[in-house]
Amino acid sequence: MAKELTRDSYLSKHVGDFPAEITIGAKRYVKVDDLRYGTNPHQSACYYRPEGEAGAIGGMEIMKNGKSGLSQTNLEDISYALNIVKFFDRAACAVMKHVNPSGAAVGLPGESVKSVYLKARDADARAAFGSVVAFNTELDAETAREIMGTFVECVVAPSFAPGVLDIFNDGETYKLNKHIRIIRCGAISTLPRYVGEGKPEHNTMKVLADGSLVVAQPLLTSLHGVEDLVPAEAENKRCGFQKSTVEATEQQKHDLLAAWYINLSVRSNGVVIMKDGQTLSVGTGEQDRVGAIEQAIAKFSQKYSGTGVLQDSVMSSDGFFPFEDGVETAAKAGVTAIIAPSGSLRDADVIKRANELGVALYHAPERIFSHH
Image 1: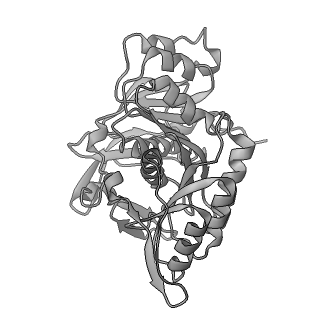
Image 2 (image 1 turned 180 degrees about the vertical axis):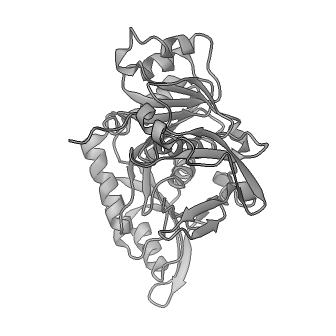
Image 3 (image 1 turned 90 degrees about the vertical axis):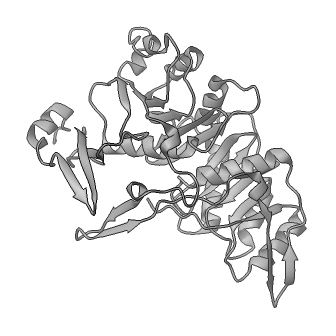
C-alpha cells in the first residue's frame, strides 16, 4: 500500500518547482510560501501575492502552525470564508469545508461572538469537523475555548483578544486540536464587495486542461443593503403582468440579503436557507435548481444541530427559477421569502404562484453562479 506523503517528504522532492515570481500581464506576483500540497497530496503547490501589496490573504500572519503547513484547499477555504464575512458590519462567522460553507451566521443585536460561531458550526456540525473557520471581528477567549472543543483545521480572524493564543496553544487540555492553525488575516476591508470595486488583481483565473487561461472579473454584487431589495415583477402572454404582493418582515429582509451574500461563495447550482441570522442549510453543486432546494431541505432534516425550524425561513437562489416547482418545493418546507434573479420566460408564472403560496419574492439584479 502506498504511503501518504508528509509535508517534509513531499517538499523535499518538490521545493523549487515554482519560480520566486511570476508576471501575468502587467502584474507581478511574488512567491509567499510552498504549500503542504495542492488539492491532493500528489500535487505540488505554492502561493503568490501581488508584489508590494499585503491583502487580506496575501498579508496574513501565521500565529500558530499545525503539524504541517497550509494546503491549497486550506487557502481556498480561507479565501471563500473571508469572502462571506467581508459583507457584514456585525459579527459574522463562516465555517468552510471543501470550498463550500457548511454554515454561516451573522450576529443579531447584542449577540456574542461565541453564539454566532455556534450557529455557524451547528448548521451542519458533522460537516464542520475539520473545517476552516473565519471571523470578521476580534476573537475572544470564550469563543476560542468553544472552538477547541471540536476538531478544526484553521481559524482566521483579524485580531485576537489577550490570552486567546494561550488557549489555542494549550495542546494538553485540548488534545484533539493541538495541531490547529491560527491565522491573523490582513485587512478584510481590502476585499471588494460590490460591482465596480474590483481591481485587476481581483480578477479570477481558470486554467483549462491544455493550459489555456480564462480571466474574468471577480464575482461581486450590486445589492448594497435591504433598501435595494425589489419585489419581483414580470409579464408574459400566459399570465399578463404579475408583481409580488407578499411583504417580508424586516428581519427576513436582512436574512435575504445575508443569504444572497453567502450564496456568492456557494458552488452552483446553490441555494441558502436562512433564519434569524443563521444558515439553516446550504444546497450546493446540483445540476438543477429544484435539486439544490431538495438537497438543502434534506440536509436540514438530517444534519442540522440547532433547535430551529424551516417555518418562516428565507432562501436565496443563485439563478432564476425556470418553473414554479422551485418555489413550490421551498414553500412546502416552510420558506416564506425568497430572493433570486429574474431571467426565465416563466418569471410571471413563478411570481403568480409565489403570491398564491404566500411567499414574498424579490428579484436580484444579477445572477451569481460560482462554478468553482
